[in-house]
Image (cartoon, rainbow, N blue to C red; front, side, top):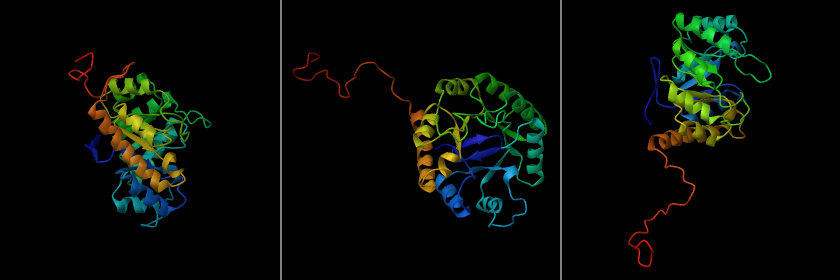
Length: 260
């Protein structure tokens, strides 16, 4: 599968995974390895800043050579999101950031106005910004226009597992923007990831769908294969949909056929 370029970063895998909700570090390691992901996202506000070495999450991720994508999960204001990204930069794990500014603790939908403002500030400060947003093509265009390196529209509410609820908006976003489109939030199983990629999206970010599965390591492997298959299917070009049947084998020339 061809590489994915986000800002100055080049990724071999189009699957980006989270690091939360696993039962322990051992399971986290096994799932991340099975996913084949190059980039992993970490919630800055939930990091143990006193942990050191390979026995800590951040220590392991650095030693394993993952591209880190710090995120601002849990932030509800522009100031909180910007401050969190600056903290990540001070810790030496930022430059590339996933901006989340939430508007409601029950649905975890993004606050679009504050997301735009936080992204604008961080782009000006030299961050490579990947904003989590809704699936509105107009908002996506505004985020691209202010300089975001990619746009990350939700497929469904975070952790819901509902899959792609509005494929048409995702298609419009992909057709309208020139920066990479990474589907973020709502994926529940491998077929959801494949559908996102078949729509032409450039990648998929997920956490709960893997960490919350009965067998996270096996699900991580399934997601890797689904992303690869969906990308190949998109590039291959699917057949046109037809209302009626179309024979797999031509009937012209067959003895006894009215076409012969």
